[in-house]
Amino acid sequence: MNSMIDYRIRVATIEDAELVAGFAEAVFRETFVQYNAASDMDLYVENAFSVRREREILLDPAAHTILCFDGEELAGYLELWQSKPPLCIEPEGALEIRRYYVGAPWQGRGAAPALLKALSAYALQCETKTLWLGVWEHNARAVSYYRKIGFRKVGTLAFMLGSDQQTDDLMACPFADLVT
Image (cartoon, rainbow, N blue to C red; front, side, top):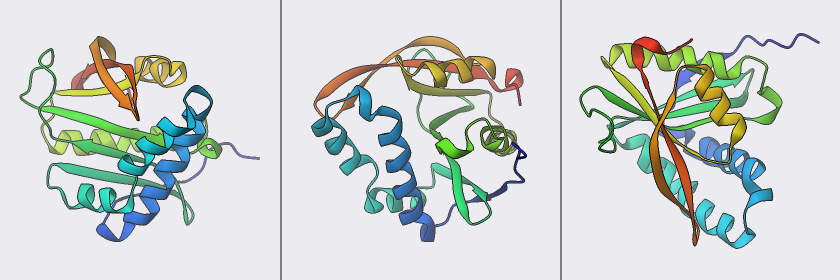
């Protein structure tokens, strides 16, 4: 079986709210359920991945969502924000990667690089100088991937998963140094 797939990339529209919300919840639960209390997972997911919340995101002019398809199946997506970064990151030209989700069947099969190329094109269009994100400090696979493409830890952020306060590593990458 060929491990690389010819992905189709497109910008999400309001009609994609239900698809993205369901995909995001499934990937989030699959990735983190073994590390967290079910009640905290349920509380977080109820707020973060509702169709209503996804519609708000898709209508927000500061947000940009990119979808990656394998045929008709959603394989992954990026949620990017032109939002005010934490103090340790220069705000001018900063672009936040709020979600960079790839479903398990597509991990290691080219979906992440396909999304990264789309991110790079969008960041160039926005005259981005710095990319930044928060990633759970115990998500070793994601931290390793972000390091591989040029991100470095610049601080930490508190992250509430339901009633459990956790710590995210704050990572940043000069756009010029992004490895695509």
